[in-house]
Length: 231
Image (cartoon, rainbow, N blue to C red):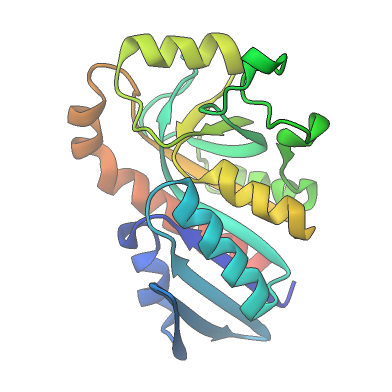
């Protein structure tokens, strides 16, 4: 793939990539700064979307429209839902959906976007998944593949964590990846989410996040930079 789009919700999630590769050009659209990196025969466009589903969706559409990227990778941190996960474990998305969509009163399932059929569950790209699991194995990283859910909420209570676990069978939760996947689906652009666990999504989430954020971000950089070389 020649044109690679990389999105982080926060500056901290992509700062190491930008520093490592260096930026050839910066392009501003709306409130987003797109960092263009020329590396070997590839153009890498790195951008901070801002937090939440609307910010990330708008940013993704701009990334696709303006820079014609061949794939989009979302990298960053997330909160654990599955009891299998420990802090600093990595999750690669198999599919993604939005846990805060609720049209149950009209006969839809939790998370189902009305009138989209089964397309409300957004599939990650199998080719990228195969490459990224090999990277993790070669670096002796503990990783899992599975469902990632997103919503406009920092999940930080035992009650909400249990609710997500029971209703969505998710590995982890964040605030952007499913909305990015939604936009990629509509544009027929391959997508992958890389999420490193920074917190436990329960009553201790804020304390744990503050302690382990840096460790998780370092691992995200290592995986993302290795994936760039493979794409």
